[in-house]
Image 1: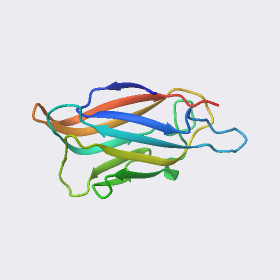
Image 2 (image 1 turned 120 degrees about the horizontal axis):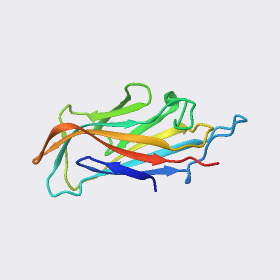
Image 3 (image 1 turned 90 degrees about the horizontal axis):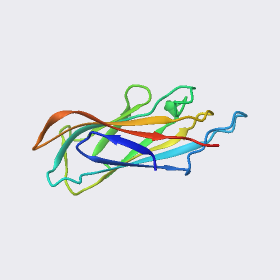
Length: 153
């Protein structure tokens, strides 16, 4: 499981396949990854969620996951509740389809990034989730959870 630091109102889990994540070969054989995010609320109060961003480091260095964020496909569940787009390059932003914050109580959310071409270098990669959320005890603001993953050969 990836290392995690979190200051968010909601709880985040991350899973990847293949497991462990594989770096691409220098010879041109690209390895592709699927990255899954599960969002839940372990508090007794509902959280109003107005935006999520999944930030993937892009470039050719060891600390970058991919050099080609344009190849990445994305989806969410429950279907129809979220609109997703890449804004800016390497940042996948989800906003509620109805234009107003969604309440996350006991229900969970699922987001997935598919077809992620993994770089050729070993290294520690940081994936960040930014949430814009509020609750009865916390004002609306941007908070982050960070996960460190290490692709292998």
